[in-house]
Image (cartoon, rainbow, N blue to C red; front, side, top):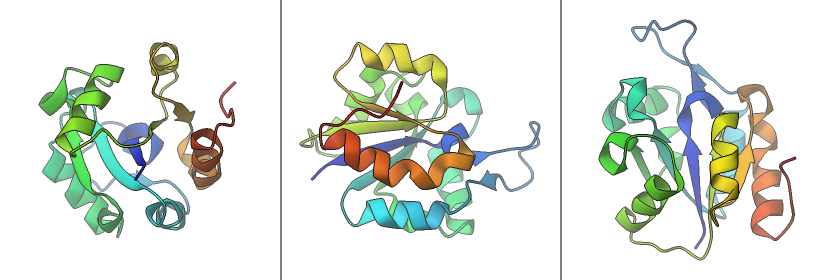
Length: 149
């Protein structure tokens, strides 16, 4: 089985400003995109500890958006390391009983692309508005294609 790790903020969820008392915005067509990946891959969600949200809070946000059912696990980097990095993703894989055949990160943060380019963990970069294209990009990248510039 293959694993897709989604860096939840800002690839899938976002708050306008910093007001966490409101529900986050959700990527358009997120349920359809996650559903398409769910039938072929395991999916884990992770959020930087700096986002000041726990894994259970993030799962609650996903549940209220009818997205939690697609995730095998939702956690924060506080459980695995200080911020999103290849080392954190490898720890997350081990926590899920890995290693999986292949693991891929979906993120909306350009600053992690160079770091992951040096590791053997492929990355799909997306914005919330482009999230509906993620399933095709994941399939292409895990199938040996190249997606990111």
